Amino acid sequence: MNQEEIDKAAKKLWDYHHMNHKLEKADCILVLGSHDTRIAERGAQLLLEGWAPLLIYSGGVGRLTEGLWNKPEAEVFADIAIKLGVPKEKIIIENKSTNTGENIIFTMKILEAKKLSPDSFIVVQKPYMERRAFATFKKHLPDKKILVTSPQISFEDYPNGKISKDDMINIMAGDLQRIEIYPEKGFQIPQEIPEDVWKAYETLVKAGYDQHLIKE
Image (tube, rainbow, N blue to C red):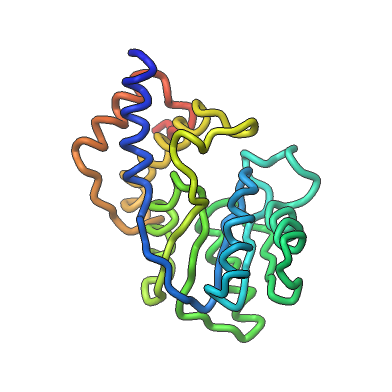
């Protein structure tokens, strides 16, 4: 299989993972921690543009950030936001979670302790994890309004010195598998996967992009 065929299949997954939500003002912006600091910048940008009055960074130390930084993802992200001009008092940090479900559960506990009860969230995630973030949030918070966004970067431009194209494709394939199997485990709401998207996934797995698959 040549690179052109791989890229075509990968782009199919990339497009599917995007929710293409139109931004609306919300009660808060919730940024999910990761190894990609562009997520932190996107959250800060949205706060500074006035889309919400509160910015939450959620993330402890995950498998992709273990050993990368000397403190949790949320704290690294908050430092970035403050350097970009976000007032410290507008930031809430949740620094214990290690997956999306915990991002939600632990963040809601902090908000409850602060006597805050937002009805609408702008969730910020990597472009190729938008759909899984949405499906997970709607499972845990079915009555809340959830809009998902990500850094506004193309498939071609997303890989950089820290995230290679192969890493990105492996993660996208793993996320598609989770969209398929997680609803029956109670982790997410079901999401329809078009036949051409599933075939693209199978093409990538056959080509060796299986490093982030759950081995069942």
